[in-house]
Structure formats: C-alpha cells, structure tokens
Image 1 (cartoon, rainbow, N blue to C red):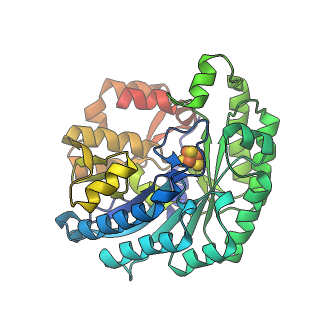
Image 2 (cartoon, rainbow, N blue to C red):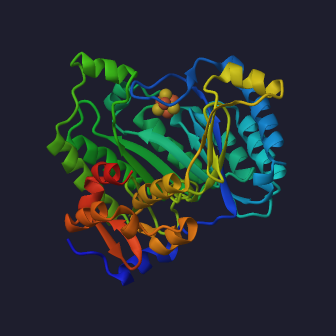
Image 3 (cartoon, helix red, strand yellow):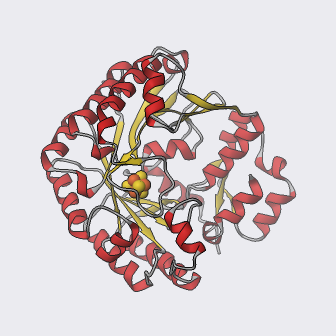
Amino acid sequence: MNARSCGQVLAEMASFTPCYRSGSFGMYIHVPFCLQKCGYCSFYSVAGAKSWYGRFVKAVLRQISQAAPASWARQRRPRTLFLGGGTPSVLPAESIVSLVRQCIQEFNCADEELEITVEVNPATIDYAGLCALRRAGVNRLSIGVQSLDDNELLCLGRVHNGAEARESVVLARRAGFTSLSLDLMYGLPGQSAAGWRNTLDQAVDLAPDHLSMYELTIESDTPFCRQQDKGQLNLPVEEEVLAMMEYSLEATQKAGLHRYEISNYARPGYECRHNSNYWLNGSYFGFGPGAVSCCSGERTTAITDVARFCKLVESGQSVITEQERLTREQRFRETVIMGLRMSCGIAVSSLEQRFSLHPVDYYGTVLKRLVDQELIVLNCGRLQLTPTGFLLANRVMSELV
Ligand code: SF4
C-alpha cells in the first residue's frame, strides 16, 4: 500500500485540524439512566430509575457550580460539551436545558463557539423537546440508531424500532439541527453482510453529517456474554464481518463521508470536536456518576452509583473513587495510541513539544518493525496507521501501549 502524499494529508486536514490546544478542555455530563438495558451494554446506567431523575439533575447542577471556580477551570477555556450516557434524552428537555445553561453560565462561555452535543434515543424524543434543546444552544445530536432492522433492534434490546429512528432524523432536521450524527453497530447476532448493507444504505439515505460505526464487542458480565458462554449467540464469522467493514468504507466514500477516525466518518467540517479532544489526549472534565476527568496528568473517576453520588454531592463531599497521576511516559504512550486512531495520525512535533520525546527514539525496534510490516507510516511529519494498520489496529496498539 502507498502512503498518502503530503498533499492528500494536508487536503484532508484542511477542514479538520485536530491540533492539540493546551489551554482548552472538553466538558462531559454522564446521564446514567436508560429505559431498559441493552443486552450488550457494559456502560454504567440504570433502568427504571425515573424517581432519581430530579435529584440527579440537582446534584449535577451543584457539581458544575462547585467545579467552575477550580484553578484548572480558570486557566482553560471549554470548547465542547457532550451529554452522554446512558440515555440523556430520557430526562425531560427542560432538565437537559438547565444542565447546558449551567455549564455555559458557570464556565462563562456564552461567547465561545461551543460544540454542544446531546446523545438521544429515537424512542425518547419529540419535536417540542428538540426545539427546546436547539434554542438552548445544543448544536449537535448524536442519535443512537444502531440498526434499521426491527429484528436486530429487538435482539439488541433497544427500545426503538427502525421507523422511529428514521422519524427522529426528520424531527431533528425540522427542529433546526444542522449537525446530526448516527450511531450504528455491525457484526450483530444473526446479521449477514447483506443485512448490514441494507441498514447502512438506509442510514446514508438519511443524509447524516456524521456516522459512528462500531463492531459489536462482547463485554464481560453482560447478557450477551452469558449467552455466548452458553453457545447461544450466533455471531457472524470473520469473513462476513470483513465484508461489512469493506462495504462501510465503500458506502461512506460514495456518500462524501470521510473516515477521520477508526470508527468515525464525517462530511468535511462535521468531525466531532469533543471526541477529537479525547483522541488528542487533551484535558476533559466529567460530571455525573462514573464520569472520568483528566487534567494536568491526573485522571479521576467518579463513583458509579447514582444514589451515593447524589448523597455525596448534597453533603459537599468528594465523589472521586479512583485517582491516578500519570507519568510523562504514560501520557506520551497514551497520546500516541489515541492519536493513531485518527486518519491524519499524530504530529511528531506536537509529541516532542508536549513530552520532549520522539516516537522513533522512544519505540526503537518496535516501531521499525511496525513500519517494515506496513502497519504504520511516518508521513509528512505525522505518525499514521496504514489501511492495513487500521484493520489490525488492536494488534498495533498493543505493541505501543
Ligand atoms: S441505551 Fe445505550 S447506555 Fe443504555 S443500555 Fe443501551 S447501549 Fe447501554
């Protein structure tokens, strides 16, 4: 395979310049509620906990106010806000609006061009609610479609059907959202390459600005994992999954959605800034139970228990249950691995500037072997995965971790 020319790399980056900004950070709010648990899901979220919604929102509003005066926040400017979960859209629209407004007000960023994303489930949105979000400044929606086949959705344990997913896109456009992302999954139980083509073709016809496509992975301690252990999960064979991946590239290319990260595709200019900050290993601050924050080399995780989270915030105590100070080398390696997820890779000059380490010197023979195997290239001053490297990304990353 030939490395892309500098011209191609620069053209790709013209609309998407994921440069690391040391003086900025992303904000994340984890909403840990879902209508029901999907069979494959290992995220922290609880179903049937409606009675906790109000108390949770109050606790997070308070947590945001408490965080804003901290020195890390005063020294940096927020660039993005992402409400994820769980299913943020199970909350009433006015609760989501109050969380967004609190962030804008407390972090004093009304004049910033913030990217504000809310993850929604097609079964939990309506036109009036979407209009309220749009008015409050939410400018990006990430719709959890996963599949447009009703049988597959049922098997995944999703609460929506294909028609509701299609309708959610229509409603979002009508409410004024000009940046829409759809989440899809492939490699599902019983799914054929033809089935995946059918879902992807329909998704592309909905003209999304952004697509995230993830292969189903079986996480431990999930219902899917238990079914697999009993031999009850009929997953597609490797060749079938490879055919799905191949078709994903073909269909997105035809639709003008360029692959800018292993699993993410966008129209030029519609790449997700919030997630790009993670891939650049930038600073971020998370609110809510289970949310992770990382700032100045310190990573913390909040308690994954909504009741205890609320009680701790209400009594003014810390919600942190894990705290880790990362060494310079740990941060360097994490930055390399995360950066390689992006098609444009990672600038060697930026690594040297941030960590005073050069990947060629640091990784020595390990990197040389990956280059000789045509899995990685050093192209125009950037370390990048080749197309084969993208296919074998897990293997490459495990050598660099
Ligand atoms: S809706 Fe999302 S967070 Fe909730 S159970 Fe399903 S996959 Fe997990």
